[in-house]
Image 1 (tube, rainbow, N blue to C red):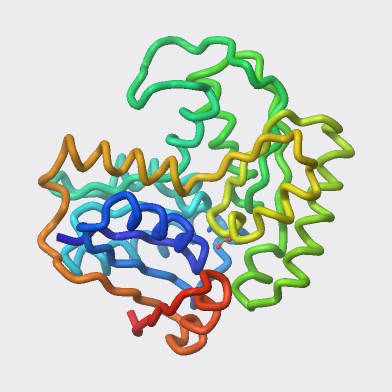
Image 2 (spheres, protein in one colour):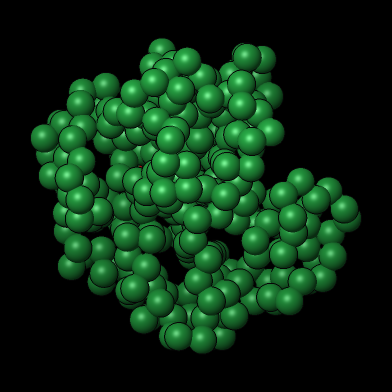
Length: 270
Ligand code: DGL
């Protein structure tokens, strides 16, 4: 009974690895919209249309529950999808909220009023579309008060990763961290608000310094998904096989996936 995991490209594989470890008996259908990546430089309408098309394809694979393992889609399209588009017998969930709950030390589903939290200065690294949406700040304001968020749109990083250019990706990460530190010299915590960025986690940590606590989503999303499926087993859906689908060139995408994940992955044409 398969669950769908969606990203514009390879980043969601960081989430897929964690959910597979946490839920070894659940098959997952991974969908990379590589032909249209990066999403982070697209308009909200464009991101909405592309994400809906991908989700429909995963529904056809029997994935009644789809996780948007893409912050850009979660920030720019998810609310509109949930309000106007997702039918009652399907679910589409994002990756933003589990991260914010961890940062604000909240339990899953805690809807009490916003309160002061320990972390006061937070650096957010995300795609230009995620930063422009201000979805992170909006969700954070529901849960915490007095947190200063400095957001850095990390143009070019997703593209460099998708092209397998690790040297360029590293250089870009270092320059984005420097740019952020000019505006917020001493963040206590940093959010990797794009599922591609854990592939560069060591570079982020080295550039930020060891005292900055890095939050990334994979393990948090895996825990939230396990909790959700325990409460809603009907959303496991009728699919039974794990598959990797891409709208790009399957051989090329498989090759880049192996380079970053360092394990064999074989994509098929979506
Ligand atoms: N992994 C996507 C995210 O989490 C990357 C978006 C893009 O394609 O720019 O935002």
